[in-house]
Image: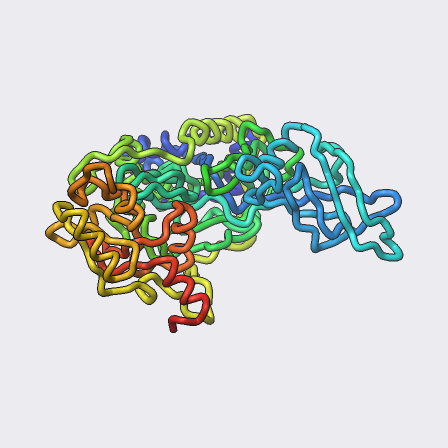
Length: 500
């Protein structure tokens, strides 16, 4: 039985004879020598992750102006920061968007620009008081002008994450990146066997007070992260570090196409190998770490799990899904994660980074719960018309024209023999086909049909109508079979109280 303490390992670090390996090296050591031998040989395993961590931000203190101002609202490069704590303190969130540049620039970019030493335009408004009479302020600052610039991130370093794909017939834009229609691509996050919490999945050595590498500087774990979900091996960390000591190499603003802005954060955590149990978990390989592939085409919290995948499969760059090969793209940088693990290894070997024992263990039994909602969410299934008149691709255009005239509606879903939606024709399509010599519905129907699911919230359906400039969508099941139809008139009636 191997038993070591953090104090003993720190003494070896001070003497310069601690054995430090990266997480990937530890996988090979455990594989070849076993957990007991690995525990005897290795003192510290270094980890690394580098990916978009939207739940990040920085506390900034500007110092007092003359005359002083109690900032009610403040913008940094036109990105608004939160000021509801004191006169000249503000918290800028990574996901906050610029009011002038939209998705192209946000809080994550401001944080990166600060770290780069660039000038930041500051604009503030206030209501004015006897002791803080100033109502407006405009200036430029750099990070060196701030009294404090502290990166304080509510949720970082997910233990595992998910892989995402999209069953819809249209491309969707998510925090998991751009997902092509009909399962045509897969994206995933996390660094697998390099990821810190995968190496110590019960958080024996990671907790409040653990010293970490964050953004190129030394920082600490301050609490469990928000949405910490240890029962499903989905733990998270709340982290802190001095922004003034950080590097833009490991802290990068990002915009996720048509979703929003974020901050790529580099984090490395040393895992002290106190016994063979820790050696065993630190030696877990990509082949052993599984994540769920979720259908993000379903707009609800509990998205269906299509299959489980290992990180080894994902890093191959393609997987088999529904009988065909699908390309896979990572949202985290394996290259930078490896660099972080190596950098942390060097710091420990040089005696510049010592280990700390947690002063509070992270909880291992709490559950992440959904938001409490006092009102029922209205779905497409509750609003849709269930008795839908349909057409076949071989039907003549004149048949559709008669249907529109007799039924007084504008949308005719075109279905195949299994009632799957393969197209849609509108009254406008009929009108523009006159005089063009078209005969069948297959010649004029729209084949890339925008659809909805029965459990899709009606506000999401309304966004689709607006986004694509259409006035109705067929409602389908998971196999694309027609269940009903929702039109802009149905939504108008709902808003106006015409549908209960």
